[in-house]
Image 1 (spheres, rainbow over the protein chains, first blue to last red):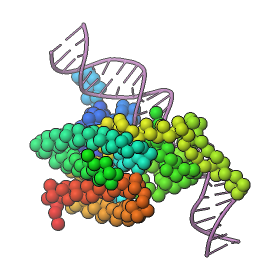
Image 2: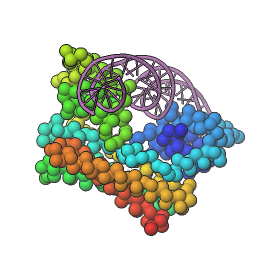
Image 3: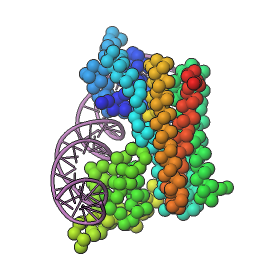
Image 4: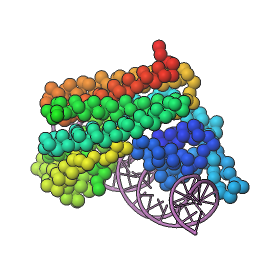
Length: 178
Length: 178
DNA sequence: TCCATCATGTAAACAGTTACATGATTGC
DNA sequence: GCAATCATGTAACTGTTTACATGATGGA
């Protein structure tokens, strides 16, 4: 079984073929989510692993002096990607997102009322800011015709909006409305 | 700096004081999210670590034959919990959730149209099922007056509903409406 | 008496991060 | 000539999981 990151890397290479490990790193580095850092220490060993497992193949671009390895999916690599993508999806528990804000609110009882309000306001400000930048990106993706990147961005937008709406519900229930 | 799990354990102990490591494990095991398993291998060394770091203190319940360690937060433990809870929150990028469904849709281009539909339908069914069980729990928490557990559950509900709404948008954009 | 649950722990493995290290290419 | 970016890699560490191992308690 491949890890989630390994499957995602297969997906990234598939979309950017032929694709250097460095480019894979940049995809993660520029991603709005910081879930995977795309650090050299994770990506280079990982693509090597996928190559020696027969899921990726590479050609080394020479002549221009620098040795850049460009990866492509093998047929086996492609069918691995497809079987990860296709149903059955992981079950409901693994499909649930983990929200660091939600876990804080779970334990927020320990705070005084004004501190609770401060947390909620800080969260709201940070989420709103993020929402703006992701919305920008999504509009660009739409304009560029990158449908699947656009749809993924739309998911992120809806998720953040849900967090924002929930924050107002939390305020209301805790009697912290402005 | 404590890890996210260490902070959450501090929160769990705080809410259930005096609290055995086993009970902490059960909180994770029964959680609808599978983000942390609460495995013995993570929890027992972790609480020991927090104890030797002066954030938890324990009394060993004897006399009834079994040796159960019951933990409480020390003053330092409590102030650590509070400083994790209080602003400033981690920035927007870390506040974003990572959604395994969203990353699959990002790469779904590789699938044929019927397969895409099958993925979306599978996701919808699994999320709906999860929604029902979390909604039950949230109602129980509300009835029991467990406000913060209730609010956290409400966050999960809103998050799943957002995923469900997004799934319909994905269908629409991809021309896969029933 | 037996099974589920409560209860504690360890060893090995695994995934990923941080920090370090090197060097070529492109544009100013 | 210099800085930013492209490009590849390793070593040490951290956090967590899986699998194993043990034993007491409470109820059918």
